[in-house]
Each structure stands twice: as structure tokens, then as C-alpha cells.
Image (tube, rainbow, N blue to C red; front, side, top):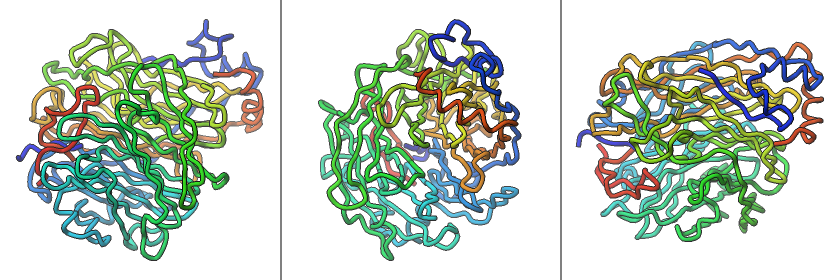
Length: 522
């Protein structure tokens, strides 16, 4: 949610037989497993600035933070959708070809001015290769008391986002709830929108809505057949901040939901959702999965230590992807002395690979170096087992920077190369001007190019001034392995090796650290 002022070494968990040598290079691991190593080189092909506060602020009545950084890549365009702005860039060269405010985006898509004038926040956008359409969502800020708000859902008219959008809306929270922090997932059957729900003060629980994709793809998009599952904080069996798993495959009749457990930590929850292509979707039995790493976050440090950054909590804030039978997710947490904002230790990025059928943890690992904070991650994977994680990193000797880590799966084992610097903030003392810690994110996005499985894109936030933010969009090319045959052998043996905004948040549940909007958006 957005705050308004107007108003390096990486470790990876490998199979038990190799855990004593977890600093082995990828080539060494491949050699031990008797397969050919993947080519580790990667190239940054595109790296350009996206929208910034200087571009969006004047159109939205003043300064605000954070941007809620999100974007998606399509056949020919990259779409950026953040708090205060919607932009389209040519995929080749990064030239901007369209720009408007997020409010105007929804008005153009047919949403009533009554809803839009409530204010909008937390935009999300996805490209769906199966339908050759773009999907977007954003919440309104509600009426009196900031309750009873709506979720806006948009779909592009064609594969070209410049050809216009249509939208619909729905309300699931009722007069006593605020639907916050929407998540967006798309698979062959449905569009999934999750949320955390609040009253004026407290966290009340979570909601997941499953909308048949056919209803949204109709000449006039609707939510016909939508199934909504609301759970209270006393029994959030889906977990916290539920993410509908995005899956480019078209098989099956249902989908999956992934979330972290509220309490205790060191658990994630995987929930199947059945018969999602039409009315009558139902939740399956949630599976609680024990994981090796988890915990609370601490604020991120900068060279000027008095300006620290709110890294949210351990929720999965980016898209969760399923590729084949593997589910990929990433989140951030403090891997040292866990505790509140001033706790010792540094934030790490935890990445997780699950078996979609059994829920088994196939592999889990960390991006960390013990002297810098890693946070706001997003992950994507291609069918070859290549993985990219985009994230922010900073420390007492490093301005807040945008990074990516490129990983390769060899013999069923995912290992990562050294992190790749994409952009560095121009200042060492960023603050949103609203106190300490300063809000950041609230998310980033990483995805595979639909026209080239060896091309990954990521969009992340950077600081462009002491109180101003920007975004950075990057395309990374990963060459195919010299010997493609290792991949199939690796996957065949895998089973043998297994494992906008707010103007006041003071009243929000401390445990969630990101609650309902209580202010008025410009």
C-alpha cells in the first residue's frame, strides 16, 4: 500500500549427500552427479528506467510512496503498472509508447468514476500466453471509514495492451472489512485474487476469489461463476497473503494457492482449488509443509544508518509460478537474531521449489552474504530449470540496489551464480519522508519472456533522490546449455536426490505490518 506525503556469497541447500560441500560450484555439482554442467553466462540485454515519482507525482496530487512495483512482459511490449501510473514500453529498446495514471487507466476501461474516485492502490498486472491477453487488478480505498472497498479487474481487448482494456469490479469484504494487498495469479482455467482483510484496526483474515477466465474474456467482462473463500484470523487455513499460483499450462481443472503460515513460522501452506473453469469451485484440503528457513524481518540498512527501510514481513509478495510439476516461490526474512525493526542480523531471500502433486520440498535455499540485507524478491523459472530471482540489496557500505540472481538446475539441483547488479540508487540515505522505517516495494516482479524461454525480465524499485523513488526494468538473457541432454537426465533423477497506499498505518496489526488504508489518496 502506498504512503501519501501530501497529505556476496549465496548459499543453496543441496541434497543431504552434498550438504557438507554447499559451496561447490555448479560445474562441480554437475560433475559429482555425472551430468554436463549448464552454461553459467548471462547477458543483460535491456536495462532502462521505468516510471518514477517525478513522472507520476505531479499527476497524482503530490508525493507518495511506495510505488508497489509491478510489471509484465508480453509478445512485444512490457507493461508497468504501479501506484499512480500505467505505462507501456516497446520490448526492443525500452522506448515508452504509452503512459497514464492508474486512475485514468480504470476510467478508460469502463470503471465508474464513483469507484475510481475512492482512490486506488496495490496494482497488479499479468500476461497470459494461453489467452493472449493481459489481466490487471487493483483495490479501491473504500468509502467512509475506508471499509467496504472494491477489487477492480481488467482484461486487455487484444494481445496488444495499446488496443484498450475492459474492466469489472466486485466486493467481497462487506461493510466491516477492508480488502488489502491484492495478489493476482492466472492459469489455464481462472484468475485468482487473494487479499489480507482488516477492519479499522485489526487483521481479520484472508480472502481468495477464483474467477473463471472465460467470464473475464467475454465481450463484456464479468465475475460470473466467481467463488470466494473468506477465512478468519482464528482459522486462516490458506495462510497469510494467499497467492494463486500462475501456471502457463492448460491441463487440469483446478489450481493451487500458496501462502506462508501466520503462526508458527517455518511452514508454508499449499491449498488446491478445484473446478475453477466454471461456477462451483471448491477448496481442497490445505497441506501444511515444513520448511527449513523462515522468521520475522528486520528493517534494511543503508550507508546512512538512521534511514532504514521497512521490508514488510515474511509474506510471499511476488508471483508464485508453476512450471511443469514444480512450484517456485520466494520471500524474505531475517536469518539472524530475529525480532522487530531494530533487531540484529540481516534479511535473506529464501527460495523454495515444491512438488505440485505431493507438496514435497524438492529444494530450498538462501540468497545472503551475512553483511547486507536482501529483500523484496520475486522469482520465475523456465522449462529448462533456469531460475531468476530479482530483489533489492543494501547495507552500511551499499546504497539500495537492484540485483538479480541467475540459477540453473543440473541433475535436479538448483544452484545460483553470483548476484548480478542491475541498478544502484543515487543516494545513500533514502527516506519516504514519513518516518522510520520507510516503506518500500511493496513488491517486485520477475517473469519469463513468452517468446523466448531463455529471456527473463524483472522490475524493481530504486531510490533516485533522498525522498524520491524510481523503478528499473531489466531483461536478462540466459544461453541454452552447450549439451541440452543433461537437462532431461537431471529431471529424471530429481526424485532420487530430493528436497497506494496509506497515509496512516499506525492502527494496523503489527504482525501483518501492512493494513488497510486510512487516509485519503490524492
